[in-house]
Length: 146
Ligand SMILES: [Zn+2]
Image (cartoon, rainbow, N blue to C red; front, side, top):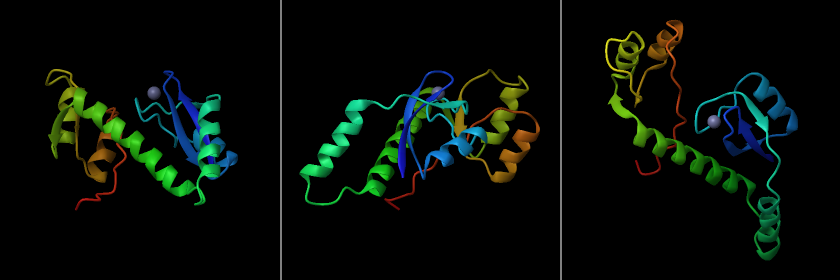
């Protein structure tokens, strides 16, 4: 696994893990990597923050346990997703299962333009895409407290 500092076209910097350098290259070309802050898929590599890399090495050395890259990866991903969810919850109205309906109304100017979030089925999401309505899929955290 390899950790890259990435940057979207709007200048947000975030970290992401990849199997190897080639995986990043392929996924960035196919638009599979999206900025967790704004959903932009124009992603480039940002220069690696040197303190960050050094701190990881120190942690590994001072601990008797081998560092667990998978746990670190999950924690990092979880942080990103939580930050994204907070941002959405602060700035957008929750519309639940009416997401597709509301997104459509906003798109066609039937209601005032505003940020919304909620649930949509794959079919609804496909319909919205077909109609050229802009929306982003939020990554979901596994429900640990269920
Ligand atoms: Zn961004």
